[in-house]
Image (cartoon, rainbow, N blue to C red; front, side):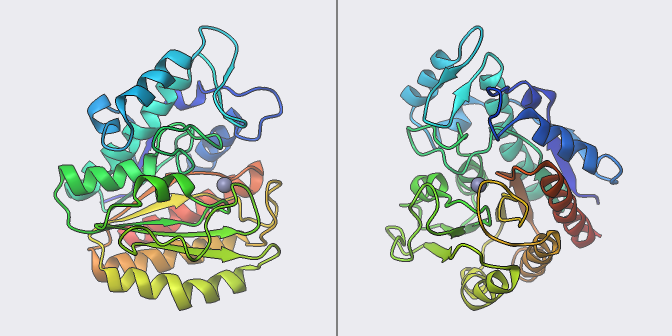
Length: 308
Ligand SMILES: [Zn+2]
């Protein structure tokens, strides 16, 4: 079986103002880089409101639908803008996560990557934030737990920014382990080690600016991977942000494309040990187009190797 790739043209219809880093070209470059790969290509469906209600209140979902303009842009947060196509894009991004979980848990794909935008890991329960509208990774986790009846899932977030939204949405969820590494200090400012969740199922790993892949690998080997193995998740969900790359303009970590391949390969190894290799990965950040597309391709190629 092949690695599944979920995407939809609607995700290219989420247009942001001129100069905004989270732009259409990001996904265009990723899709171009993935074009030659032998993937099981699937159309991302629109999420159902019943899916979104697993993580967001109805009032928030309605607010987002109402906020989308019929032309131009509407700002819903300091960094987050909606255009006429944004609601469809956000529903596809969330729907991709749900469908990817169904494919992997249904045995139709060994693992899956969702090439979607807007990203999700900064969206809190009732707050759009940091380019994010719906909490795609947290939704994948809740769907796996509540719809498929899994007992334990893990979300692994290697985006350079703290996954504050995922942490917020899963703060009280003892069936979900959230591991997130982030440059600190950096926006949004949260993600200290003492933020551990109601049931001690949140692990924050701050990394100082300038940290190389060597520093990351040491931290993951010492803290993240033992915790992940100990938790024995039945599914690993990856918040795949590539903005810790040394060429990224929004942050100051110095990881290489090979580092993203290494992380993915290690996560695939752990998934092989504890959950039959089951991984669902969804795109978060990454703002240097070349670094983003190369690192995403390296990530997906590792998923493909593990799928064989
Ligand atoms: Zn980020």
